[in-house]
Image 1 (cartoon, helix red, strand yellow):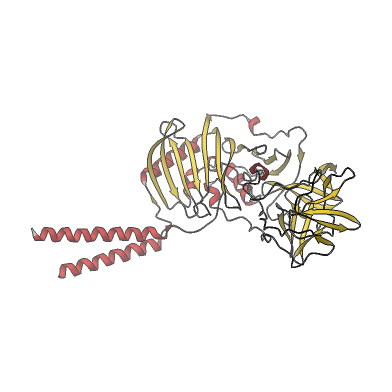
Image 2 (image 1 turned 45 degrees about the vertical axis):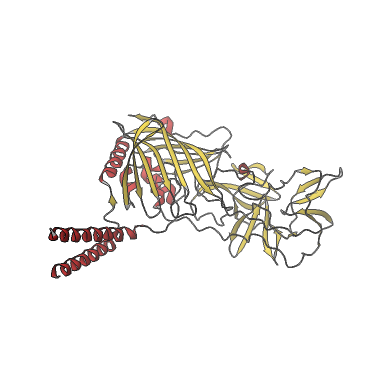
Length: 244
Length: 256
């Protein structure tokens, strides 16, 4: 009887040890990797080109930029969106569809929009003998004869303390440009300057109100003195910007 | 006492040999349940032997936003193919959509929202064209796993483990539920239990990403055909559309 218990004891040890072996064998099976977008096959492919560096969430200048008179109100940090992931079936979402909830940012002012009153937080800017008002989101306004305010294109050379929400960072050589609706910004002395785009820069969206033209039989778009030549890259439509 | 010592030595040897085996060949000996493997193989073989088919898929896909919210976006995909050299895929989302046509000679990509399309020469088979689209043009064609000539080999390529999780209905169709793991993803498939073992549901979990987003596809309207007409795979430019360049990856200069 005693020897039976002894045999059971050894079997228990053996089973426990086998279970331990199984755990050891399974342990190296998980590792790290990235995403493939709705395709088992695609998950095995190499990772896409690394995304460009994200812009700073918000850069506050150590002092107010020249020609700018801040009214008051320190502004809270605002998130700058990273570039949209570039997959063929993965680029159809409309950020406005999420109503700003997902992004934690208000819907921005759209160029060409007229408003009765300026946003509560704004600064006055005098630039090239023209008067502008700039809101917390980097949108520029000009007062109209009827007293309303028109959202306008920020002039090249203007300085903004913060980037508007929704800008797309685009790396060209050593410089990172931030693009939104036909306006290009570069970092400058802890603020951001509005600049002309470098020839050949590729942007993901057309400026609102760009004109459609046909050049040498090929469709093209024009805005503010620049051609926006469409092409399909990485499965999505993008636009190469060149001077007109 | 001697017997106890002998047993201990034996167990240590067992541990050592099991560990050495795991280190030596983890990828060549996938731990896949034979039933799961058989279910997947039957379904894949059935697809591979279907000369032509069409299927509709409703897609639910998690998006993890920079703000940290995980939301779910939806789209529908219609795929039609004729082996070995015809493929048409329509993907439609809110207001937008993209489509491809492969007619054995050219690959056309249409941006439906902007009414712009690009065309490039394509190789002789669907497999080669899917590789061209992905490797050269950065285009992952939705549901490409169904379209390849050997879905089993393609989907099992990096699988390390797999299991059979029982029978479940999907939209009223009795299905056999299997799941597989690779280093990057866990994926599950629900295969119709019957003479036509067609996939009814696919779930891909990107387990190494933040918040482990999922891609869910429910398949319906399977239409198995002996022959599909050429017309379905021929691109006819929509009214007002314009031809634009289809640019290879990394050839477009600066990138947003």
